[in-house]
Image (cartoon, rainbow, N blue to C red; front, top):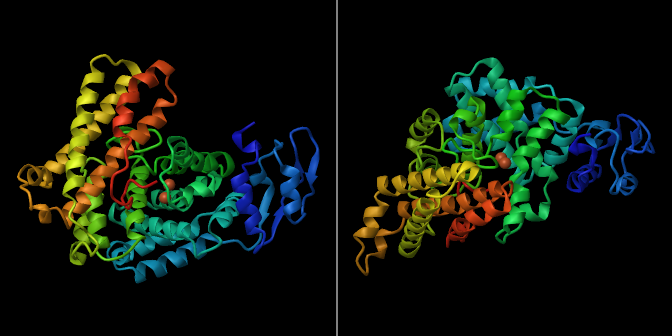
Length: 428
Ligand SMILES: [Fe+2]
Ligand SMILES: [Fe+2]
């Protein structure tokens, strides 16, 4: 039995919402694990099924016994992507060349099994949502990156399939957490951060797709320097298409918000920590978007105090990592090394951008220097530090209690909320 033999209520809720606009029917008889027939093949799904399914295990995962009629297709997504590329100046610079549009057309060739068509419709049939917008931006960027990297036809198709399906795991997450304006608790964050793993399982167990697609999907929030989640994988363990998808997903998160200075914010975020993303893609992005350089936008205020807080936090974290490393072993040692490496990269970024120097040469009344680009650099680095804490917590959950207690002081130093809105590449 797989995890999908138990019905996930959040996913079921999305499927039921889909039945309000589109017919969903049973493609087979639906039985519970005791052999009780719950629904007959061919029957249209209604709220009555939802009641019958309450806390039952099924003989076959529900996703494999339902099909949608007239749901969104890969052709619809490709059409919407093409329109978006031509309408959005940033995407136009990265993904409107002939090769990128040819890469995008590979999406039309992707043949999905009916279970994935159902989930795709449940996730994206409403084309006005933020989730669909994110989906389109990610696919559009993948098409541009695939063309630039001169991927083979097969790899392009695998990458675009992964981009299409990468966030299906979000269907299985409590929607209240996804739309919450407050900071999530560590436990709540863990249930959101598991979505790449769920998307991976959906692709392999429900979709029976190729390993390369599942692997890339599962890696879409990983970073080459090991600062990503859920597994803190480093570049040797991230597949080539996984690394392209991760860069596209991260860029999409900024570009889709739009607004003044979006191109600058996106290029700053992608190049700030050089170890996070594929250097070849980064060069392509920065070079292609140079023409769109513009001020960072209004609303930036001097951030002297935030800069001081971030650098002070970094000092404390580096000292604690050094202290703990002296007596750490095994997996805890590896986690600490990883955290230390990420802090080292953040420190290098602050030096390379001159923010460190600016802080050292600050004199009272000099707050005006801490705005514009500096504001965004501090903003990005602050959230990265916070993210290390979240990722460490995620990994620490699998450790023994004494190991968790050993790491707790470090996590507690890192666990703070930067005094800036969360609008960065490290957003979930
Ligand atoms: Fe995601
Ligand atoms: Fe995503």
